Image 1 (cartoon, rainbow, N blue to C red):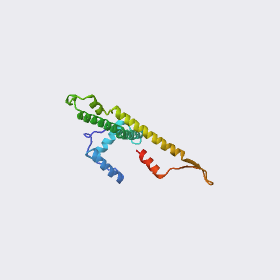
Image 2: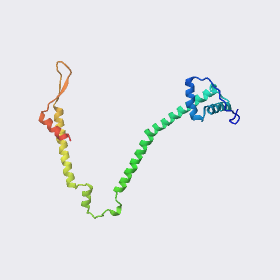
Image 3: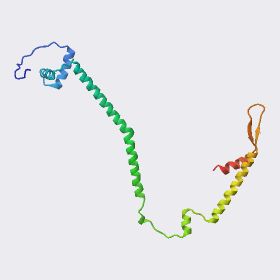
Length: 191
């Protein structure tokens, strides 16, 4: 290998394709200050590594490099997709839960701040939604009366059902009820 000190500044011409020469000039600008130094660096690289560009090992190395880079790009894309689908929604749900817990804590007052008042038994029962025995009995009687009316209405409807067998077609059932009774039924039991 010849060093720069041993070299004389004599130049020699090499015949190179015009397209390749333009490509080399562009490449040489990035490598070294002159075309000669760029060419020396490239030849030094190939001599030191003991490979040449057309060697099958070098091609295998480049193919493997491209394959690994492609797989790494796939893994990065997969991780980004996984983060978008699973990690961010979970994080948002947990953040929402913690925000809600903070809001609930802010709304609740400590026990010392609540006013304690004394109530009679009847006042407690009214606040708890309890009713007296008389009101309960009235409600119970009203429900029983309503059930009786309902069962009478249903039995009247059931007794009014007749089977009709026409000459042509399938047999069917007919309910004998007038429109006012049907309207009353609808209004009463729609709720």
